[in-house]
Image (cartoon, rainbow, N blue to C red; front, side, top):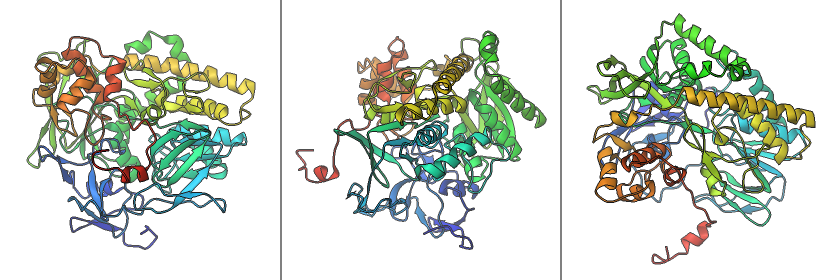
Length: 581
């Protein structure tokens, strides 16, 4: 069923009619109708709805047209759809929303998805995964060099999270670097096989090709570029599980992608430059932004004037956001953090406790105050989406922001031959850095003729300048070191499995856990729907702290989402006896 002009734009949720606007997600339509939650958790029967807003956390699950376990934050609203908060029998068929593309006649066909008997099996010189700044740049650059390219992306439109927009928007207002997006997307639409709505759920290497199993078919190529981006990093605190507490990325996704403000009175908190565009966007949409509370300190910027000189554009952006916040009289406080969220009568967030932090990241006594709000957008930078990189065996290292990143050389080549990476998964640094990394990876993974020697040299220099700025940015906006002291014994450290902080401490102190992997096995953090995407870094840090040591790469890997590492065919699984599984 499609959303065509003149068709009634509404669906039903638990029997109630919910109107929506064209291009909105089902979650955005429910949010606009006043619903902050639509499922309850397995252990505590607690209400949940939107949290990450981009399909990483699985908080917004519901049943759509008989298909259970659908993430409403990435499910387009469709006229006449039937959405329920209750489960349906496991044998129900999958929804038919996957778009299928027929290319050359005589294409090989295979079965790879339950409920879909035949899907395309298509071969390219290069497959790029991710339609954000890095993926767009990689695909466009490779295609300009004569390489046949497929660009797979889960979103319905190009742009990723940075250029997320509603259908038909031109980007004339409110979008940074829109001309860059317009130029790259025009090349992609003309020269690249762009496949939207394509979720890559498995990747494996055969003798000659990388085989990518997706929700719309099987794609293969001798070379791939991973441009899978990142999602918000969140630190647990009392009340972070309440409906109405979301990541800044979710607030941005609801607003930019669906035109739905996350609330009427919103607190924005955490660390990093991303808080500024989120707050400005909300204010310009008519939201009362109570304040922006930045846990970091801008002084590291002043200590590296040579680095700032190479990133004057970013300084101009920051100054522009500051001026717009002042215009809307939005307070901006550094060394402040949201340390607790409180529920109102309806169970959603109604107040947020904020406090001033000392240079060590600890709460300054006597500075705690309570602010009324109906939504809190909170996040501490970003966590790279490295799942596919781990699946194909790419080496990872600890980045300057404390998370994991994929190790690459100057051309974006990973430690696995034929696998290239670009953008946030090689180190979080913003859209401009992602674009230039995508250009370099697309050039190298393609024919190698897209960039001249001089153009490549200039691109490497620009990338190095932007990486240097990113290091300063991470130093200015770290997660506050004292955040574990905010936790109470019953504070959840894992949202999916509802693991309280006390259980993690007991796993170390009473049960003898010595690392994050053993804590995961004993207390179950990271074993739920999101497989550690949301809680992994925090649980790894808390485990190390409980054991009196520094968090390591092995700790982070133990809680990272680790997909299957060896090829498995559905036909093989179907033939297993119970004792063989």
